[in-house]
Amino acid sequence: MRNLRFNRLLILSSSERSGNAFQFQDKINLITATENNVGKSTLVQLIFWTLGCEFPFDTTWTNLDCKTIVEFTVNRDQYKVHRYQDRVRLIKGDEEIQRFDKITGEYARVFSEIVDFKLLLPNRQDRLEIPPPAYYFLPFYVDQKKSWTKPWDGFDKLHQYEKFKQTLVDYHTGILTPEHFRIEEERHVKQAEKKLIDESLGKFTAALEVVSKYIPKISEAVTTNEESFQAMTDEIRNVLTSLAKKQEKLLDAYATDEAEKTFLTHQKSIAVQVAEQLELDYKFSVENVEGDLLECPLCGTEHRNTAVERASMLADKQKASNQLKDIDSALKIVSNRVEKAARELTATRVEISQLHSKYLVIEDGQQTQDLTSIIESIAGRSIEDKVKTDQEAKMGQSYSTEQDLKRLRKEQRELRLKERTEEIHAFFNNTFIQYAQILKADEVNLSAIRKPTDYTKVEKEGGAAENTRVTLAYFLAIYTVVEKYGSSVLAPLVIDTPNQHEQSEPNYESILHLILNGVSTEAQIFLCAMKNPHLEQFFPNANVVELEETRLLDSEKFDIIKPEFDLFVQQELEQ
Image (cartoon, rainbow, N blue to C red; front, side, top):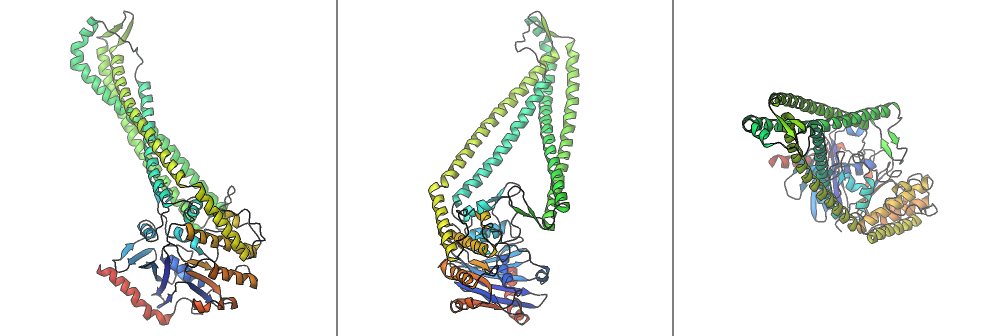
C-alpha cells in the first residue's frame, strides 16, 4: 500500500518577524510540552491546514498572519505545499509550481490524484464533485476537541455536503470502491438528462392542453360536396392557404409560449417557497437557538449555528431571491409573447371570418361547418400531430435513459458484494473488540458497535474516561481497516491528547502502548501529549518535538526560515 509521510513543517510570520521549522521522522513523532497552550495542537493543525483542511483558529493566531510550507512524500514522490490565507502553491519534485486560489475545485482534484482519493459527493446543487482534502484526512486525525465526542468531525467547515458521513466511511473502509464512484458520476449525468427530458415532456403536455382547448371540435368525418369545395378552390389557393399557414405558425408559437409560461409559473411558486423557508430558517436560528450548535430532533445530528452558518443561510436566501427575479423576468418576456401571439391570432381569425360569409361547408346535407372552424381545426391538428411526434420521441428517450439508470444502479449493487461487506464488518468488529480489551474498555456494552458506520453509537457508551477509550478503540480499528481494505494512499495517524478525562496511570500506559506499538508497522504516527513518565520509554525510538514557552514561533529563526519562503516565491516568478 502506498503511504504518505509528513517530512517537514515551516512557519513564517512576517508581521512578527518570527518563524520556525519542524522536522519529522518516518515512524513515531511525539509533540510534547510541560505546559498547556504552547502550540502542540496548533503544530499538527498547521500541517493539515497547509494541505487544505480548515480549523477555527482563534484571533490570537490568525492575527499573526502566518505562511506555511509542508514537505511530504508519497512513496518516492516528493511534494511541497505553500499556503497563505486561502492561496495554495504546489510543487512536485523539480516540476513547475501549480497555483490555486482556493482549496476546493482544481486544487482538491489535483490533491486527490496525488493520494488516489476517488470519493465523489453531491454538492448543494446536486452536482458530484471531489471534496477538499479534509475528507481524505478524516479517518487519520483525532483532534483534541471534537473527535473525542463526535467521530468523523475533526475539521471545520465539513457540512457543505449533506449526509456525507456514511458514504465517506464506506469509501475509506473499502466497502465502496473507486469503480462505484465512476458509475455514480455516469449515473448523475443520466439523472440530469432524465430531468431535462421530463421537463420537456411536461411542456409537451401543457402544449397539447392549450391546443385542445383552443381548436374547435369538429367531426373527424367532415365531408364537402364537390360543388361547395370547387367554389372555394381558387380562394383557398390564393388566400386561405396563406392564412392557414400563418395561423398554424401563430398557433404553434402560442402553444409553445403558453407551455413555457405554465412551466415558469410553476418554477416561480417553488422559488417563492424556498425563499420563504430560508427566511424562516434564518429567523429561527437567530431568535430561537442559543449557542453555536443545533441538534436535529429527528436524527440527533448536531448542526453548527455560528455567524458563518447564519450568513450562509442569508447567502442562500439571496440566491433564491435572485433566481426569483430571473424567473419573473423570463415570465414577463414569455407573457408578452403570448399576448402578442394572441393578438395576431385574433387578427388572422378576423380575416378568415370575413370569408366565412361566402362559404359554408355542408356535411351530409344537414350540419354546416364554417370555414373558420375548418381552417383552425386543420392548423390545430397539424400542431397536435407535430407535438405528439416530438412527445413520442422524448418518451422514447426517457425510457432509454431510465433503462440506463437501472443498469447503472444494478452495476453498483453488484460491486457492493455481500461477502466483502460482511468480511470488512467482521474484521472491524473483531479489531475493535480486541483494542477495547487492551484499553480495558470491554466492560462497557460494545454490542451495538459492530461496523464502521456505527459512529453515532460510539458517543453513547460508558462514562467520560471509559468513553474516551471506546472512542480511541473505534478510531484505531478504523485506521486498521483502512490500511487493510482502503484504496487511497495511507496517511499518517495523528492523535491529539489521548489522556482525556484524567485516565488512570495503567489505562494511560495501555493507551500509549497501543497507539505507538500495536496498531500498524507501516504507519507514521504523530502523538500530541503533555510530558509524562510513561512517554519517556518511547523517546529513544521517537522524534521528540518539545515546545517551550516560545511556543511555535521564534524570532531568532526568522532570518533562517525566510529565505526558504522567498525561494518558493522566486521560483514562481521565474516560471
